[in-house]
Length: 127
Image (cartoon, rainbow, N blue to C red):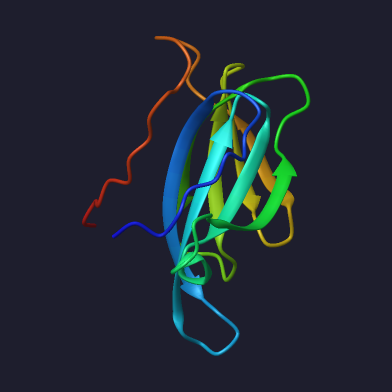
């Protein structure tokens, strides 16, 4: 179902990610993120956009100063009480973000062989 469109990024979009969290009334809320070569992360409110021609931008902030973001994924909530997003860049760094607080929680060096990370997927591993 079409909910709207938005020309948010100034240049190429690197990746998009969908996630879900609880809103203020403890209702499940689905959200959309986009990360672009302009080093910005946009969070869109899909439900508020219903019936409009444009997606409603909920948050926007810079995720990099020099590196170019290459992909992002909604981080599974297992050990944390906050909603998190994982990003990777062309300098092989991976960052965990709290999009509501617009703060980086952790930065790690990713694999440095085989080129930059362009896709990520959540794997379900049974213990």
